[in-house]
Amino acid sequence: MIIPRLKHYFEKLFARRDKMPDKSEQYIADPELEKKYGKLRTYIVKTDTYRENFKSLMPTNQERVLELEKDIEDEYLYEDGPAGGDTHILYDYSHSKGKRESHFLSKKIDGHNRFNYRIYPPGIYRVNGKNIYLRKIVLSTCEGHKINGGPDY
Image (cartoon, rainbow, N blue to C red; front, side, top):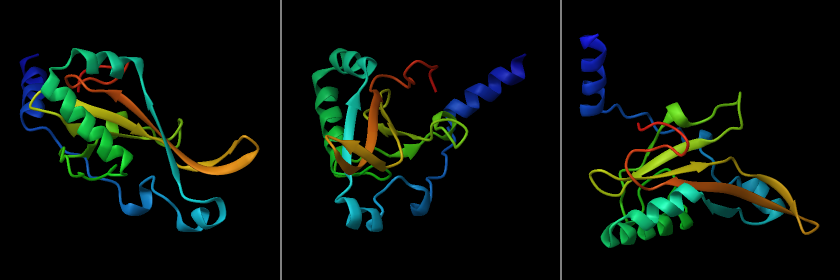
């Protein structure tokens, strides 16, 4: 009984870091598809939990979150942008080919709070009778170490 508790404590203390996917596995633009369908567009969605989390943050952390959102808009998805963030992937919460595929990533807001988001692979979608090249990103949470609808990590 005590060993599992100690293991959990040491995992939190010396948190493991999942290896970032290779460029070939990242959900970034394919130049061939961009030639055919135009520049990859990014559709960003904020969950209700994310919106509630944002409201409960201190003003300085809200400013930080807005900077991290700007980095996402500027396509700093798998690396730190100008706002930094110690960007890392959480494979335990990413989906592989068995489910709807996605990568779940996190950026540091401060010592306690994390900016968590999910990236879906780009695809061709029909919008208003026209094919467009589109990638969806869902901003999941921005308070604590929480997964939307799931446990703390």
